[in-house]
Amino acid sequence: MCPTEPYVLSGGKDKTVVLWSIEDHVTSAATGGSIIKPNSKSGEGNDKTVDGPSVGPRGIYCGHDDTVEDVTFCPSSAQEFCSVGDDSCLILWDARVGSSPVVKVEKAHNADLHCVDWNPHDNNLILTGSADNSVRLFDRRNLTSNGVGSPIHKFEGHKAAVLCVQWSPDKSSVFGSSAEDGLLNIWDYEKVGIKIERAGKPISSPPGLFFQHAGHRDKVVDFHWNSYDPWTIVSVSDDCESTGGGGTLQIWRMSDLIYRPENEVLAELEKFKSHVVACAAKTEK
Image 1: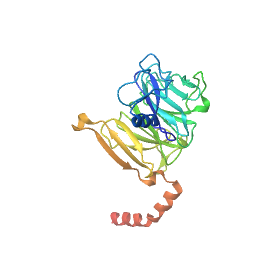
Image 2: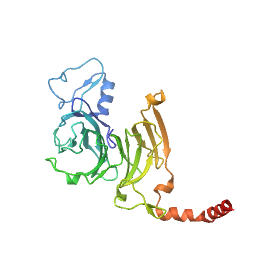
Image 3: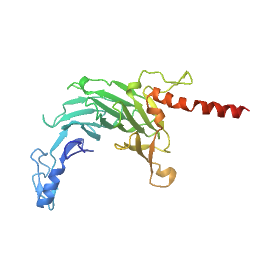
Image 4: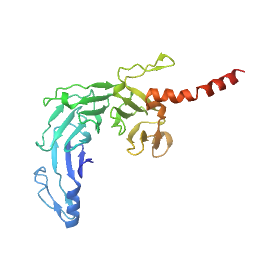
């Protein structure tokens, strides 16, 4: 769904990206007729009406060489969007300039791409997830029309194919990724390059990773941040075989001690220091 206009994107095994308008459906349903847009593919029966309401696409975009796995709109434009597919390509489109790719990044990953998300806080940043077990962050300003471009960073913390990526609605640098390894990782690209310590000792973890939800028992196929309840996530896993059911849905929130500014956390913990010391002294006695 487009965040600014009543438009819908879809992609499929026919290797195309298709743009639809909900308004066309509403108009068609009201008149009981059919709406066929002139920029639809010709020669496939689109010039004929059918019984009942039928809606033609606003545009069909060809550029992928294999199944289109995921699509997303630019948060600030109903005319700009991107797609990823099993051809390992990330493609940027602009409906205002035609149905051909504006930018086509060949080999955006080393395997099929499963998911893509556009940063709602920064229109230049795009996330992709792949069967090569990694998440990559691209800046569209560094991409050119001949497909030349490299990611800003590769996030490597999963042990199986990444199935879903999504930016946090609460902080522009934070995003999540879920995978077939049953994990949902929370990353902050601003923490890349920062050494994380616990009890004065460095922690060995993938750069940028600051939380890992391991509550699912099988591959986490999808998740979504709650836009109205900060740092709350709903996630679903495909554990039908292990549970004998239809999968598992979880709604969860990490402790705010994890994501709040360090100085605030230390100040709050300082209030409980005397209590902890007293309890420890009683235990020793």
